[in-house]
Image 1 (cartoon, rainbow, N blue to C red):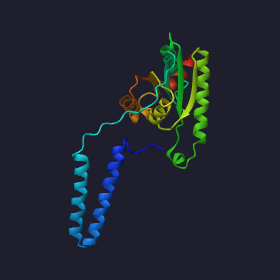
Image 2 (image 1 turned 135 degrees about the vertical axis):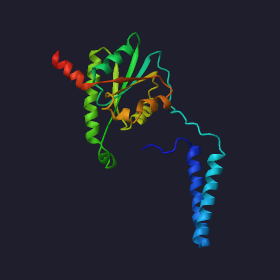
Image 3 (image 1 turned 180 degrees about the horizontal axis):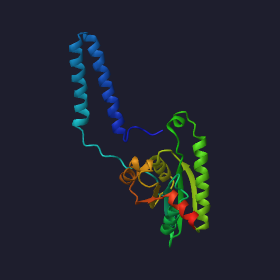
Length: 219
């Protein structure tokens, strides 16, 4: 589960504000008079907000932190894709970026799931489907002479990237999506958020599975 606070300072500030607001409620209840109680509550609440947020230094979003391990000069490429993971366009991009290098490729397939099944902790079906697509992709990359391994990631692609980077110090990241209009990741601005969050070059590859299937039938 993701932490809703980006920094320890934010978590500490939340605790302080919550404590002050509880104190305001207690004082308001002790005073009894409705209007006086409301005035005290608002005054203490706004005072806490001003004291902690308005006078503090501007918040800076902390970048994701991961361990960069020596890897003997080999190029490390992190690939994040789910339904598009076996797309021809993505495999071509991976092969292009690995060409001329001794490269290690890690393919992460976030286990996409419905909200209902997610909250019910029913992820087996989503993980099984992601694993089948991942296996097909790795087999295709092997045929392309690309050394790659894979793993199932968090359903949130950004969290999946961060989790992978903690053990795989990537030199670059490839994120693959469906075309605009058919991609939930693009609707959620995943590419822009990833470039803001991770200090690693990020390439975006659009895979049109319908077009690829149509071309394969014609061929």
